[in-house]
Image (tube, rainbow over all chains, first blue to last red; front, side, top):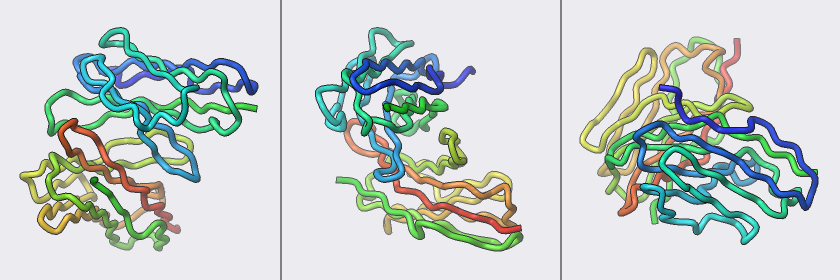
Length: 114
Length: 112
C-alpha cells in the first residue's frame, strides 16, 4: 500500500501565477478530501469527493480555487491566480466508502506564494 | 453542526509522566473517532481509530477511550517520552455525507 501520494512536496511561486497540486488516493478509496492548514486557521476542509463527484465545496475560499477528480486515482487542486495569503500546507486525504472507515493523509504540499 | 474541541491547546510535561489529552464533540451521532499525531512540518499520522460501538482502543503506550453519550474522548499516553512531542488531533466522522470534523489540536511537549 503506497499511501496517499501528493506532488509536489514544495511549491514556490510568484503572485499571479497558476498553481496545480496533485493527489493520488489509496486504491479502492471512494472518498477524497482536500484540506488546507495554516497556523492561524488550523486544518480547514476545502472540498471533498465521493466516487469522483464533488459533494461539498463550501470550504473553497474563492473562485480562484478549483478542484477536479477526473478518475478514481487522480485529483487536482488549482489556484489561479495565486496570492500570498494562499501560502499554506495543502493536504489530500482519502478514505474507503464504508462509513466507519479511517482517514489517511498524504504528506502535504507546502505552498509559498511570494 | 458538529463541532470538535480539544483542551488544552498546549501541554508541557516532564519525561515519564502519564498524561491525558481531551477531545469533545457536540453531536453524539458519530460513526467513529480517530486520533492523529502531527510532527512539525509533517503530515498527519493516524494513531488510533475507535468505532462508535467501541469504548476504547489500545496501541502500545497509547489508550483512547470514547464516551459517545457525553461527547467525549480521551487519549492516554503512559510513561511519556521526548519523542512523543507533537501535536495531537482528534477527528469524528459523522453526518449524512461521512465528513470528518477536526479539533484544533493539543501541542504536547515532553521535557527530557
